[in-house]
Length: 304
Image (cartoon, rainbow, N blue to C red; front, side, top):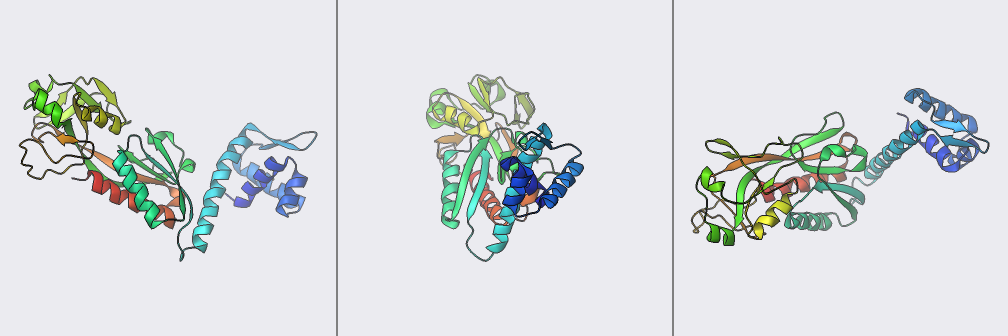
């Protein structure tokens, strides 16, 4: 799509008339009209309707205007990057993080990015279902589950995160460490299930999938981990601690939220984490840098 056609539509929408839009753009009225006509032919719909005082957008025109603004935003970003390719990155980057990203991981990410790219302004948001976001609404998206639509996104698998049964030491001291499926069913369970997982609730055990009836199911991993850290039950969620021959028997190293992982011989599974970026930003140096930072942080936080 010709960007000047988009600029023409935006100018008419903002000024309210062809004459004012042409003057603002420094074009002739004939040039402006030709570009609007070309855009309408390309879209296959009337985008502007005449009024007594000028022109107004049709419903299709409003939709094209919305997408066109984002397209121009990305195009302008490309030009800025090209001009400053040999200088320090600057400008705004929109990051969309998985819902419930653990606070320590988010803090490490922001500190790392602020140190490496001090002139960049970071706009953070969080999302549960990545399929609900339009590529025009973000520059980089981190998520669990599966790759996004390859026509609009480039998805890079950054890590396979291990799913484990987690609990606080206090809870396990008071209630004991389950050693079998029958014992596990006696414990209260908080269950993490990402947006596109099977709607059944099962955990992976050496003898196969075990159906469970969780007290709480959520797609917010931090919520599930927090419930377990208060000593109210077990959590089935991604683990970040390393199995390192801990001297505390069945326990592993303590994570920042004071959770310990139960033995893999009881239950263990996997979930994949991805970094996805809009196709239009595949080669943007700023976006690529932030993607690599996410890859590094995900690996440090979750990889086994």
